[in-house]
Image 1 (cartoon, rainbow, N blue to C red):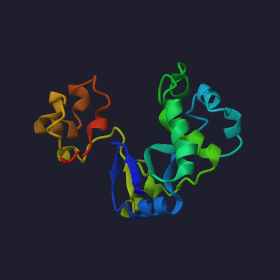
Image 2 (image 1 turned 180 degrees about the vertical axis):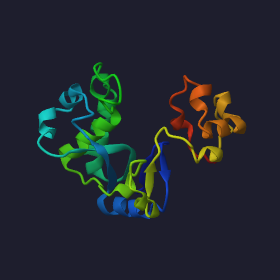
Image 3 (image 1 turned 90 degrees about the vertical axis):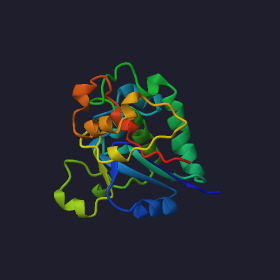
Image 4 (image 1 turned 45 degrees about the vertical axis):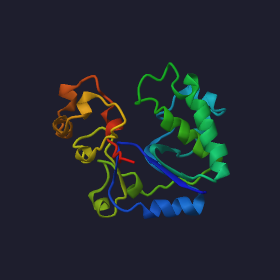
Length: 210
């Protein structure tokens, strides 16, 4: 049975219907959207080498990064599986490919996003450029009326925090068992209270009971 898989990381917010994205996936077999940064500005040299290309190949044109946290595809699209998913997984299992020792921060290297961006542009896949699919705090206010996906990333407030639902069969940190604690996180205080827990975004999922 053919299925559509749509991945959105916890730093994204849905602002309107996903219908245009689903329609794109049904038409082209996948959905990819660009970012505002260039591949060459935020990708380590070793990653280019590991993916059998070079920085020079991306220096003669305008190659924007492909969003790593917004990705959709249809399960029977063999081209996407062969061209993107398989090499993506292979690179992710190779630390010298996805996270070279010289890539110390996301200001110079975007890790999984850098890898995805290179793979997508190497095979020439269509990447959605309309900002309403990757808006952020730098977007024009006029876009708010038809924004589909907004990238909040690490910024507060976390509007979905009060909607988190936990599976009773899973074990979670005590921090996420308390509605009061989640409300505090929602109100910008998480960095002061829990300075070691930098990756809170990954817990802002709506997990429904089966």
